[in-house]
Length: 566
Image (cartoon, rainbow, N blue to C red; front, top):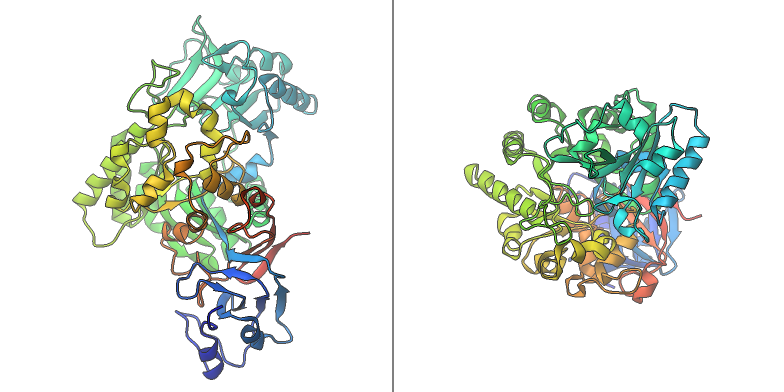
């Protein structure tokens, strides 16, 4: 172990400034962790045995004996017993309220067939009064065996669903969030029939007679669904969703969450909770709203480190295409398994260009969902044009959210433009069973989930789960990132896997960098926020098969233990 970091100075002087933080020499630490392996991700002292926390920040790192000098009668001391402590995980791309709401509806993620889905909905209908909506999420037609019958392009037709729900409208969202299936009652309420036109950027899937099958892809999902559920500051359901999302984060070691798109009304609720001290997880929020509303409201809503560093709003979220699983990713060439389609452009390039102008004018980061290779190229071109027209000496750290399928020519452009590749390790292994079917061997090998090619090209790659699309578990995502192994044991283009250090950085300090927050979080350094997770297994050195056995033992935010393994 290296010498204790800053301890000597702290013990010899009256006050020790660390950034804007200071502690008196007669004060004791509020929390001490000792007797473990602490990986800091700070090059000045990469490892330590112990650390101390005061006023919510790290005040010392070093060996047990030195840090023990800061223990007083009121200090909480945690003996790590050799366990691994690392910076708190930063969820680099997820949907915070969506996570909470997913705990309040039917979970369809474990269903193995369409018939399983129908049974789940039938059971739910028997427990609800007639007329109430049945809402669920998590189905994926490419993961069912056998495929549904009847089907159109592999997607189920609503008939079986409608037969078990004659008195209930039902809407079931695809695992990706980029498609939904509705029953007959829901389509009747929405006045959707064979004459209803497809909206721009969306598709109503139809049978050979032109009748809707019940499947709505991309923007067409807006045609059908429950009404009267607008979110406002008085929405108790919203607050309940936030509570449920927070608990999921804490149990999984997530201390900060990059929220990929919330309305101004939802941000109002986040802000109120932060003011009241009730927002326990740190949120970095992308605004998801119309260009017209953003033009009026962005200046008012921009905030950094609000509520004791619990809420930052300094980014905008847009979509340019859909998802691969729903054949909505916008591709340069047609899908191998749907040769009549290149996917869907869900928002016009000109509309996103207007958003880019707003982002530059109001100093927001622009984060654009782009999955297909055409979508990624269009966004990189748009970013390049924006940077050229409004040059600056500093990186704007604009982001491509997902960046799943890239043309090889576009890989180096991320580093050249200073664009963050916000990717999700678990998507690669989750999507793997149908990637080659969709793209073919050549495109999949050259550009699908090419984390290592991006890293070797000096791009910043950050990690996350896209929850509730996938489970929030960062350990599962870490495992996917470093092994690229499927449940079958098959490896999915293993040459693109990350090293364990790269994967840890992608979930901590690199994710902090992607939010302009590397000075306050992402590593365990004196003066930084004391956001720490303690794991039962050392995922940096244990055998691969032991990684998934690791449990979160403690989740610590601002020096407070907010979760402890029972």
